[in-house]
Image (cartoon, rainbow, N blue to C red; front, side, top):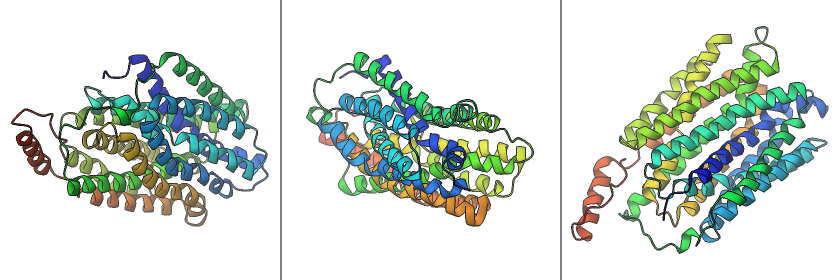
Length: 411
């Protein structure tokens, strides 16, 4: 089986951008929406978006299962058209509960991309690390677009337009994908190819636990930052920059710079051992977040670029481990389970963000995030080491009559 065609890869990467952008439109526009709904503080409206992130996690299990058993192309069509419909529903919400319902539906459709779109993108890719890096860049450019486009639309056309315009774009992507993406001859679960070197159950379970634990703590940091950075900038730039469109552009620039880290990390994953690279990146997070606790103005902006580089730079590792350890016939299901646990836990970040900031301010939030980053480092230390993977590679060669096998993932 050949890698996906270039046009399909482009549409899949745009889908990743849509996935992350749509989940953050509300967080970027929350102050305007709260004022329109008659609420005094944006923090009081923020918990109503928690359902989106709960379904973003829990929905990964059925989405991954359907991706493997029914087909990834079909599930991606459900993704594009579902995202468009739910965004348009959010645009007509009249209060907190109707908005919560629309966002929860959006989260359910958004849950499809990661367990389906990424395995589809990397299937038979000659350099999966580089492919994951470009995919990550696309996803985080979606985060940047959420800040830039939403800020501009809220200022010039109102918060409802911030949902309508991306919704129409998602609809167009769905139509293009239906016309251009080749049909699958069989669902992934029916393919006959097997993993070159099956790993023993203890080592596989250990790798899966590390993937899931690191994904959960990494997703906590991702949700805390991407949902809270807009309001953090507004607070720490008060009296310096007060225009929401300018603040949105500044935040978009932060995310655009940080997103490039995923391309660099993706290329490194194809060349060097995962474990020390992963540990080095997550260990850099805590001191940068600690320095940001009391930073103001332009100093905060510089630190925000630095800590977002490390947070975005850590994202490709869990996807790379799935590609290297898991047979393609099972990837969507395994990714779905991993993502359900990770995103389910991290959805608490969205629910807790408003209350934490309301009671303890961003000082408390940044302190918590620094602690979470240290937990991530402890989890990654448990990742199987190079010598263990090499030992099982040799065992696989012997079982295969001495025939050379593809390199087992470095760890």
